[in-house]
Image (cartoon, rainbow, N blue to C red):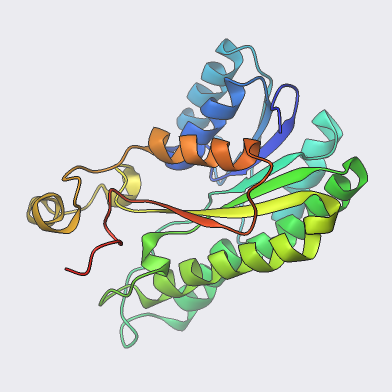
Length: 249
């Protein structure tokens, strides 16, 4: 897929991996609709950076945990730019707590934002993609959805669902030339890890990550762009983690 003048909708798109992806796609001439909970200073700065690249930008304030707001984002994008060619679902965030600590509300809210939003967004964008005979969807999972850790059971559960959703959707809509893939980032230096204690970061760099460095949002964005543009890849989950999940110990 060539991105020039393609309509791209990115959720969670005003900071971190989402923002880096928006800039990467804008640099290829795409038109960007960027959704986030708040149209705050991060959003306005991103809008200016996208426009400075010569691309159009539509900012959308929406909570992906609310189905009607997720669908509204698609409707507003289509009203401005036409049918969505590319969907990147990067919205989400940490969900802390083990099984006996996590509240029922936190458990359900995690699924609303990370998993149920994929259902509603895809139902909204895929009909337009089918009419155009082409589409690309990239879902953002995590290495926490591939390997088990001792905490954050809800986060691990929802991120583990996403790769299977990508495979199921990829198979279902392959005949329509709609490709669905997934990225699973490791420890990426974003606000997600801002509260990480120094001793944990030191342990990660020295013992857990074979490349001995944290990743950058731009490195994940580069892979997302490749999954969008490479029209012979579908149903895959690509790990971007410095080797974190590939070793035994």
